[in-house]
Length: 524
Image (cartoon, rainbow, N blue to C red; front, side, top):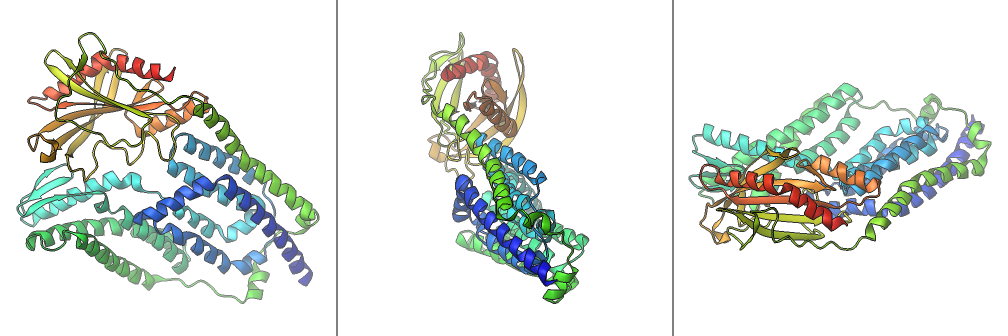
């Protein structure tokens, strides 16, 4: 017995040293991805919990130290294949500038390094702790628009059920005591993420059956969604009944967090009534009860065997970085683009003096951009193009920050959105549509409206899908053709009887091919 324990301790020291060295190389190779996550934790209250994930994971592993000690770490060759796959996903995320994809792949690579060096038996003991690492990835903002829509729907429905008349346009609504708007902070995303993060840990520590754990995790996702709806309704009603003296400024958020805290307290208090304590054993009993493979296969190779295993993992980790360097070096050699709009597109559509009202879409840090007005007969539209080259975390075409207008924009409010198909010469083009309402700060009559169409151009491919735009960007980068992409936005005053929409359709039908040729000329 003592001889086996001693042999395992020797192997564990060798494995721990190898794992530490490989982690050091991994951190050096992929520090940019880790730094991008930390920067989001630092600046975003929604993801500040990321700072706590690693200490929690270390503690969870420490709780299993005696069971780990009874295991013999054995490198797993099949994990290397999975590690290579995760590295490829990371590369796609970097090339397409999808932070969440590269960050998820980064965590997966970290977990697979552990699996590759320690083997399945050891990892099975700490599998929850390793899986919990994925909570450090800032993930979930994609659900924000839908959650905001649901919050607005439920709030308006509850207000009307309470006898309060409501006039609604998009995410803005007006009641007799004032105007309200559902913004990003009202979506409830931060409540859901916080609840799920804590609820998952609570379920693991409090229950032993998989069924109870899954049920509680599901409840910890649903409850904050419903609680956010109730919170939004109560805040509007408090403002309405108090003549907008409470629940309208900073206390708006304070009341929200206090209410959320009370709901979470009740959730965990109720959940604690069905806890299933984990069986306890003496340390020696854990070591004796835990099945383990033989240690001879590894210990016979000694330090040299672990060195070979560690080097193999390092080689696999380095391959995505080598591919990235080659691809981005070729892209960096391209000159900065110059985006000068042509004086005329097709016959009958030529540049005209700037019409009003003017829209400045919130597309950040493009490589170049152009805003031009074009007129034909009595129709005038405005064309905005933002061109992106050498995309990265700070400069990318598709981003949650790149929108037509921000929710708190003082000049414009988006009151509707959708999509429609515009027939073109070589097939229909699906474009995003929106209607914007002007505030008095635009210099126009308050309430003036714009009709807007938007689509993406990626190496001549046209799409209105964020996902397809990202896929095209990654594909062309992998093929060595660069990541040149652009957003094309056209808008016109709405007018009567959809005059604006008809003008935009006529402009796109006549000029989409000319716009494509113009953008292609920038690549050459």
